[in-house]
Amino acid sequence: MANYVYIACSLDGFIAKLDGDIDWLINIPNPKNDDYGFSKYIEKIDGIIMGRNTFETVVGFTEWSYQKPVFVLSNSLKTIPSTLKDKAEIVSGDIKTIIKNLKQRGINNIYVDGGKTIQSFLKEDLIDEMIITTIAKILGEGIPLFGNIGIEKHFKIEKVEILNEYMVKTYYKREEI
Image 1 (cartoon, rainbow, N blue to C red):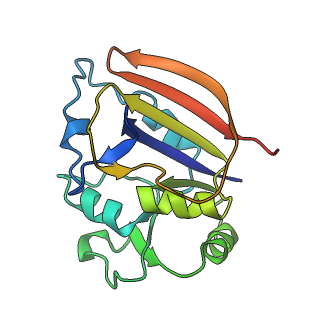
Image 2: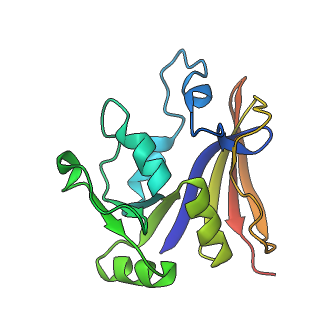
Image 3: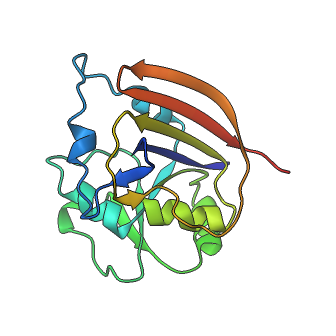
């Protein structure tokens, strides 16, 4: 049972431009049309928790990317588009209570996605492992992956993979100090 982060960021630590645009990430050359291990990673996941902003971004994609249940962490979002009623649901309130309730439903291995959501989970010491793909691009400004979470966290590097000339994937595991 663990909570995982799987995300990409720029060299300067941003996951999106200030307006939420992620075209810089989508437009990386990928001649082999490789998913760089994402499908293998997602096999061990029971469910996905993402914030409202991330949800609103992925709803705009041409097709729904997730085969696992998605839980949208939001105190402001009230409804899910009708086309996604069986694929996503809104959760709100205390994160630890949400995790406890999901575990009671058999959702034990959780993929945590979205900058603010990841930051909230880190503040509550609820991230066990992170896989961060660094893209060889500097955005100059944007939405930070970590921001100022206000506490120190320790992770150790488990593995590093060079995916191509533009991307490096680093595997981190939380370390108790």
